[in-house]
Image 1: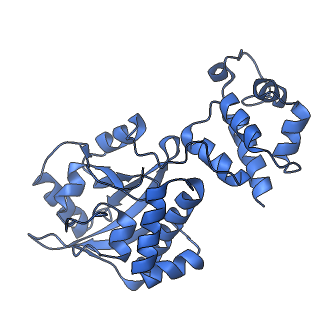
Image 2: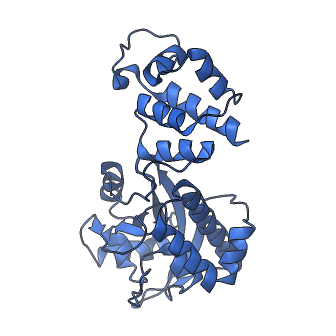
Image 3: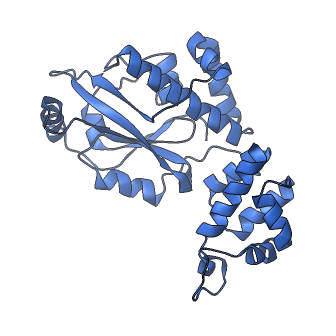
Length: 284
């Protein structure tokens, strides 16, 4: 299965790459992106071999994976994914934690919507003032205070309450995200340490790690307990930021609801910067 997924990923990247970005002439083309012949020439292989890779009829070496990634000028996340699908550790297998321009713009443009940006290991690396205005995330002073998965399974945040159904969805998402990161970044010692710590402390997480539940939708709802007022129920939607291998979580209330009015009140009472970088230890 991985061989076919690798081929599909290569074809998608090839067809999504503008010729100009790799030093080729664009002009009028009948096909999207690069031709197989062009990718082969850039990567030092035949067009027929590129075809066999894309059709899942040949398994690439680590060198071939690197050559294709370089030829397509693939971003870090795409490179890591190609390596994982081919069954290799990436040349630089550390979880990236730089807040790129795309993630920064996302936080800036939705300054009135509670949002955080996390790395692949579920460490929060930046939030906006609307998220801080919820005032629900306590900091006990532990090593993984800003890690969403560790806090959820090992030391739940008091101001965050979910129904059994939503908790099940949330747990499935977190376990799936960490498992994916673990496969993509096998050389990140701190990520391995984080996973081992959660598995040791949480029997539920250990079960999910060994027997993952299917993730049907990357969203769940929760009641955020504000210390100075009524709780507000929000739905969290997880959005991928593939170029930097980050994720953003947006928290929104039902339109026209009392929760929406309450959220607006809470956010307006605690203005602040659009982007707040967090100083947290952890993988990456």
